[in-house]
Image (cartoon, rainbow, N blue to C red; front, side):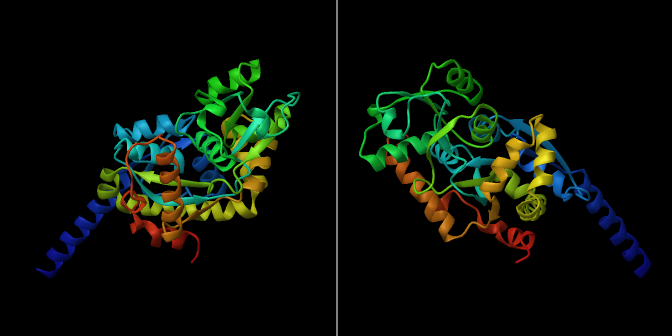
Length: 314
């Protein structure tokens, strides 16, 4: 009888392991951000489930895919996340991404006569609606005591913004990495304003409620590996830049410029993260970009904090 029980237990364990191995975690990435660092650091070698990567040029379409149930998880900035939450997109932040504010910036072409953000009064600035680039413009306007009518915001996806910016159809481009480094390194664009002192530089690893419920173990494992990969990248920027450059078919000098100054790390959803997200919510509410008051604590999930701590070696 004991042998039968033991045999049954082994069969169940094997079935559970097999079922776990067959699970697919569908992850939305932006410009190879998560995938490149995880591949470069080697943390994907023994993943006991399948990761299916989906590439996006910006957060808005990634969040749309999450809302449609086409993804389980993804990486997005705090601004588009807030915009999506206010639109009742079913998504929650499960991990925070901290970095410096240098890589979120308002750019002008190298030969532009514009020297500072003050010179952009009445001018056209391209950015994505609800994006962190949009957030930067709103924060800058508020700090200067200007109104939204003091500049002309032209809402464009990154690819279209690049075309308009290159052709001179707009005077400036408020964008994020790696677009900032691409413009600086390859085209000598100039930064007239960055996010330091204006926004938190916060991004999120997000997931759908269904994935949080049904793939919690896989998401914990993924976050642990991503956290470890980011910690590795802080000490191995050259190797990461090489991998990212190959993945995105871009010269390594671009990601190296981005990564050495960004100091990207994964952080748990703590009170500080919730407070910074609340500031973004309140900025968007004051600006009229969202209509309802949100509670940051209601749109985050702290159940993955232990996994992040393990990945960071804490």
